Each structure stands twice: as C-alpha cells, then as structure tokens.
Length: 375
Image 1 (cartoon, rainbow, N blue to C red):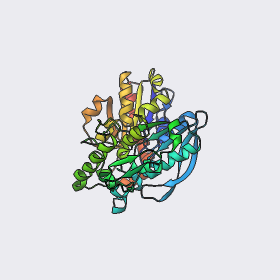
Image 2: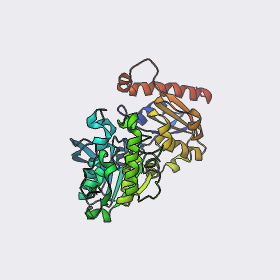
Image 3: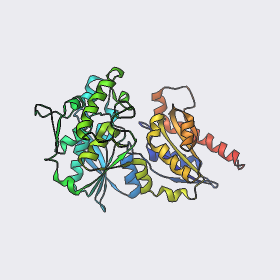
Image 4: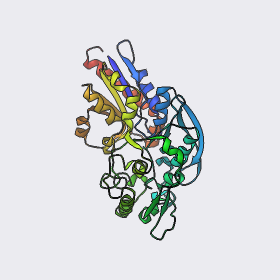
C-alpha cells in the first residue's frame, strides 16, 4: 500500500513537517510506503513548505506586527529564480490578537506585510509569493499598501492613517509614489479561502468575529468595507480570494496587479502532487480545527478534491471538527478522525499533540490493516 501524508500544520502545536513525520513513523512498514509532503494553503507553514520542498533558504528580518511592535521573523528565498515567499501571518497573524481594544481590527494594520515585501525587493526579487492565511487584520490591505508608497485621502483631502478604523473615510487612493521596483516584479497572492471582499462570505462577516470584531459591530464594519470596496474596485465585481487576509487579496490584485491563486493548488503544483497521486492508495491529511471555513479552500479540502479526481480515498486527522460531515464527504474526505482521545483542556491537548496524533494514527492503521485482511 502507498500512502501520501499531506498534513497541514496544527496551529500552535505541530508543523506540517512534524505531523507528517509522525504519520510516516506510525504507518510505514514492510507493507506500507509513506510519502511525506510539506503542505500549506497560504497560511502558517507556507514558507516552510516552499523552502523544504524546493531546497530554498530562510531570510531573517525585523519588521512590525499588526499593532506596530517590532518582531523578528523570516521569509523564504530561492536564489536560482530570485523568488521570495512571504507569510502575511508572520507579521499580521491572529496570534497577535488578544481581543482587547488594542488589537481590535479597527486599530490594527497590515504594515508588516508591506515591510516584508520591501525586504524582498531589496534582494532584487523577480517573483514574490505572498501567503494570505492566518491573519488577524481587517484593514483592506491599506497598511501594506501605505508602506509600499500608496496614500489614502478623505473627502477633505486629508491623508489618512492606514488603520481599519479609517476604511469608511477613504475617498481617493494615490498610487503615483508606489515603489517603482514593483512594476518589474511578479506578485503572486496565495489565498487560503475563496472569500469575496464583502458580503456574507466576505472579509468581515466570515472572519471578523475570530479577529475581534464584536457581533454588534459586524454590520457597521461591513458598511465601512463596502465603502472602501467602492473606491478600490471602482464598483467592479469582487473576485474569489479578494476577502483573504482581511482584504489584502483585493488590495494587491487591484493596486499591485497581483495574480490571486489558491495557496494549496500553488504548492500542490510545486510538489507535483498529481504525479504522486497516480499510484497512491490512500491520502492522509488534516489540520487543527476543521469547520465550514475549511470548505473555503484550506489544505484538507484542496487535497481531498484533487485525490477525489484520481479516485483515491482521503482521511483527515483533526484536533476539532464542527461542520456538516456530508459537505466534507462531497469534497472527497471519506472519514474525519478527531485525535483527542481523553478528557483534557485545550492547552494540554496542544502540548501533547504529537503523542495524541501518534496514538490516533496507530489505531487507524490497525483498522486499515484489519479491513485489508493483513493484520
């Protein structure tokens, strides 16, 4: 039997590489061959997936996070092609959100993403890939654009600070002083969701609560995003991926002429996943929390839809599952297996995630071998 292990990271506990290593350790024996694939969807682990899969390097940089604090982080670098790989979450990630007024989306900014792009431009990048998953901002990308040279004005001609709170005041965007190096650089945005900028599946209503917008504030914040949308898109239609990272997807598509692609499809192509699926018997994937947002195009769904095309069953190991099982089966995931096997706290479960995943994988292997009559 040949198994492909393409586990996403389990946020705060296991990276994709660590989770896949556990799956291989448990499953591989004289009867089973396991191929590990470091995978991500544009969120946490995107840089690692690219660097590990194509022998890239890590570049250390110091930039600012979503509340303006200096943070040390990295981006990926492929010297041969002069390609930089950036994770928006490294600077604007939800890990910086503490649900206080200070980190409320109206008071935060994506400036760190813009700073990372400048660092990549300093290395004479020909291509910059920007993963948009896992962010805690809802500023429509204006923070990142401001760092790159864009200016935002209200109806009085006053320059606005690039914060979420000012989205509804923007009446004009000045692009004339954008960094000229951007014109000669290919920008690819790797989105982890197909969310539009506004609407029920948009940046505010779909993801606002988890970033700190209060339920009573959603409609007002949505109105502000709609106002910004009318200026940014000039009343053209939203596109899938525009709502990724609180609207960075739309901002980069319109202002930087970025190509918006599915993060999981981009990495799957990079590792030639389709070729690997040709002779696979089973695909194992998973993530920390699987819910209806997963259906927007996150790792497990991207993997399962592709394996379904090849007629290969997919199972998913998850820390937590909330959602409609039938929707996931329709997408190709035959079985969703929660890994937590005892009464515990979330903190304890995350601390022992490796052991929990190992035990669950062992039980699953025994069942698979039993059903195949080889136990």
